[in-house]
Length: 297
Image (cartoon, rainbow, N blue to C red; front, top):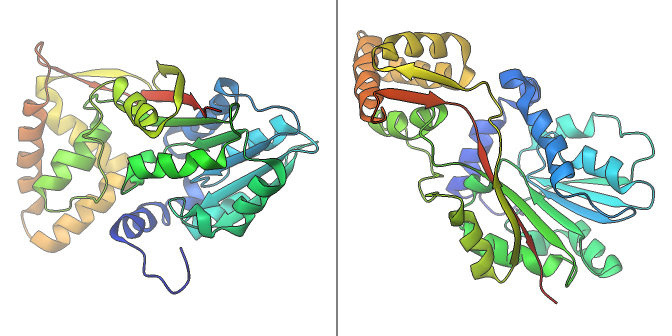
C-alpha cells in the first residue's frame, strides 16, 4: 500500500482489529498462535538455503521458524500491513544460524509494488514457499490474491500453504458474525464461504495450483461442549476474560446507554439457541483447514 493511497475497508478493518492486539498477540488465548507458526514449518519444510515469503507475517511467528529452517544462505521476507504487529516482529532476535529476514510494511494483495519481494524472485527464480497464516479471511478477493501469488513461486517446485477456520460455529464465530451483525457492528471480512475442506482446495485449483495436501488440524484451544442452558454463563465468562468481547460490549453500551447489557444478553440467548446442534449442544474450539498447493511447470 503506497503512502498516497487510502486503505480500503478490508485494510482499515485489519488495522483496527490487530493494532491494539499487537503487544499481547503471542501470549493471547494460551499462546496457540506460537504453536501454529511452528506447525507451519513442520507441515511444509523449506529447502536449506531456500527462500520463503510469509504473507501477513504479523509478529513473526511463522517467519522466524522458517528463517531457522532455511538456515544460512536462505532468506525469509515477512510482509504485513499492520505496523504495530511488524514492530513486534522486528524486536525479536533471530534464531541461531538462521537465514536472512527482511521485514516489509505493505499490502499482501499488492506485492508487485514491493521491491524486496520482486528482488528475491529475480535473484532466485521465485520463492520455494509462500505462507499465509491466520489471515486469508482478511482479504477482499481471495481468488485474485492466490492467482497473483502463484507467479512468485518457483515453477514446478514452489509451494503455497494457507489455513482457514473451519465451518464450525464456535464461540469466536458467533461473536464475529451473528452477534456483530445483530448489533450492527459487522466486519468487512467473513468466513461464510467456507463450507467444508474443499472450499479452500477449489480456490487453489481454480487458480491453477496442483493441490498436494489438505487436512483438518487439531483444535488450537481446549475443546468444550456447552449445553442449551449455559448461554448467560458463557456470555459473562467471555466478557470478563476476552479483549475482543470486551471491546464489542463497550461499544454497544456507549451506543445504547442504560439497559444495554440486558438487551445484549437477550440477543446472545437467541443466537445461542439458533446455533445449538441436533442434540441441543454447542461446540467450542479452534480447528483449521490447511491446504498446500504446488505451482506447475
